[in-house]
Length: 545
Image 1 (cartoon, one colour):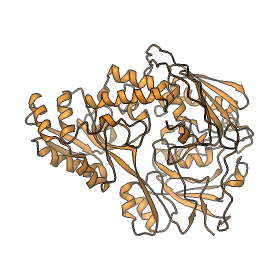
Image 2 (tube, rainbow, N blue to C red; image 1 turned 45 degrees about the vertical axis):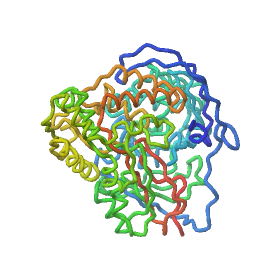
Image 3 (cartoon, helix red, strand yellow; image 1 turned 135 degrees about the vertical axis):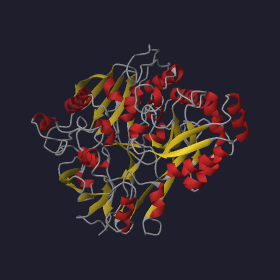
Image 4 (spheres, rainbow, N blue to C red; image 1 turned 120 degrees about the vertical axis):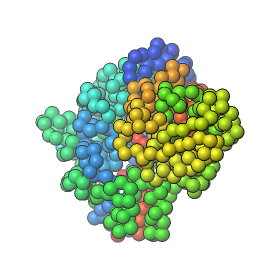
């Protein structure tokens, strides 16, 4: 199991006494959980509870006044508001983490490190307990303790913002066990799903004192992260300076961070080529990494199942209401050819939801829809669709190239695909009003890959697909430690279910990329956000003198 790899510096006690539970009626669905045996706890090196996470001693070339320069889209979604009750928490990433801080950090290899929390545990399917780091304060001096944790979690839950994580809506309450220990009680057995969200944006907090005083923390945040927001010019620039009251300030080697606005697409490339930034942002793509080749930047890439190049289709209306048609289209595409054209062969065929190196990958599903145009034509004939024509949405970049290739491949079996640019998400999500399929890159991690796309209650579930068998598998996985042996077994069943029913057009796992200027950036580490995108590790990076 991945437990020893994922928590090298974190005590995680998983006292799982999971018993069957009746299905619920919530948006995400309640669900039963199978019995499981508690895995052994993993001890943190050098102490219990994870201890203090520190950075290696500063090398001689650190510029003590160094400011890390990067970019983000500072114009959309209100220009990165810092309050989850005012804007969807799903949009909160590195610009927010700089000042608000996170409970845990997630490294590029998937391992967790303690940050504002020391440990977490799944007590039972309806309960998650979090132990916070002792002595941490918000930048206004308010204790970052269990009372502050309770205040923020319940405040976000009560906001019922349309973009808040649906898991938050399943929180019954939070109880304070002692100043550093808070317990989350859930209405439905989804402890595993909540547990897996702890390192991310759902649990970024502002000072209760500032909120109660009426301060607009959406634009003037008061967090417990390593930096303070000192200037916020929407659509232009955000400036941060080091927080002297941050619990681990002595080991932060940046004097500040500067984020400039960059329009999606060409904007980041222009900023990099102009020398205006030092490191890539979370929206940096494989296509952009190729565009800056030869710039002198160091570029790293890796295949990742957090990027799924696939087609979501409406399974309740023609032509895809017939499973044979969906299966035929899956057989008709040559994934190796698409991989070569889109990812230079660096991607991987998508047989389920996890790439080959993941412990959740099921080898028995490899080649499930291996390229077989004759099988595709046979299925279409059986379905009475020998002259099939349909529209497909695409977006610029990888999606467009994939659609063009798929269009040519389908033509070989007598199917006509008409590409259409997706100009507004409402043209497809959630009712597929403009075309019955959208072929694009989706970035998600863990159970969100399925819960946000194939289970009722999410705008990403096209035409409200409702498969009771799949819903129950999702509910059971949500109750479990995401890496337990029971979760592995359930994931195998879930992936087979979705492949057999051709719930999506499974194409390729994509390639993520991150980059930096080696002449300026020292200790170039990266962290993963909730979508599995690499973001600059401002806890470790420094600017060279």
